Image (cartoon, rainbow, N blue to C red; front, side, top):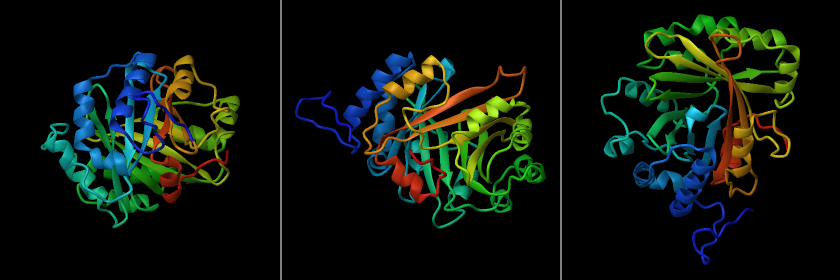
Length: 313
């Protein structure tokens, strides 16, 4: 288990969340990656969601794009309202048109649990929902308040075999929606390129596919879509690999290598996650890699309880 005494000589931090230490760790990582950070915004977030950070598992996020800064998320362990604290802390406009949708998805089942993503410079980014299992796409799109352009995507997703959902999210800043699918079985080049074509991305080469495939488990993988809520336009897709060995990560650039090396984790077992993200436009220009890493609260336990497709390390 990792420990630190950076705050005071008498304070030894294990995987329990300590706001004062977290603020030091955020400032350090932001400095290393040259990412913006606001102490006032960070304090507001940590005050508004004090119980959530203590109760949940916390992780870091960054991408190979410097303009993205860094972000962090708490994964809740309990079914609680995560919107009202944001509204009360002026982190979320109570009139945001996507609030009814995320409330609907957060109540799609008695087991569904909502969590939140934050940027230390801007505040609340996303509200993210584990749906309590793996409901069908039909059930998810039939929930109240799903925008018509999103509901109309059922056939398009079905045509490429996307019919089982793991998570959903709303990005409050871009007014986009994320649907995270469970794709059963091993990925093939044909399937990968059909999936990437949803966003106008790809095609992958055989060598690119083999690189990605080597980090997935045979049983299946998580495939994410980013969709403009107002139009149904699929802006981006991503393939996720979970719980990777920190000594054997995919080929990434210097920024992402630094992120995985310097983002602190106090969990008993570190969890490293990589997502290959693909968008439209000139080939390769819209593609990037996203990294996520455990921080505190035993992320592995939460993901295992949700049936996440994690690779043995």
